[in-house]
Image (tube, rainbow, N blue to C red; front, side):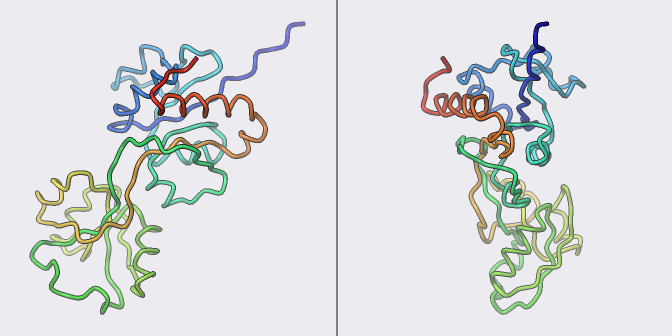
Length: 225
């Protein structure tokens, strides 16, 4: 009896801007998802690739780390901001892919920027989708952060009296400017990372290691053999 072929590894990829930047790197790594993958309106979430040993799934950026941490996907690509926020023990991030460049920053209304020394504050309300990062950042300055957890539209919070500050991803700063805010402090610079599940790396070292090597070669300007 012929042994069944092993199940393909799963590579979790983020939707949106990062995926567009990632596509040339995927191609250099020898990964070509099926035609449906290029259709952003497709309701499919899992896609075959040109390599029968690898499937890809397309999920929200924050969910990539969850899929990989819990072993639903063995490999993934996500921003360093997500790794900072969740700090999963089961995730190993061997490669900085150098794409998706942005920063996690504190922003405040232009009208009040610089009027008070933040070091004198004992507490502050902060709107963010990064409660862990915000708490850690302000605690290091001896400030208690009362976090208003939002998944979007953080820029509205100060003008509507919901929070004094926001902590959010900033790329160009144009959205902040359009909403009367100014970036007052950079917490961390962010790029996207290749991440792998630590257990999968131990149990399937050759397969996972081969994909890490292919991404590394693609970063160095070559292509997969």
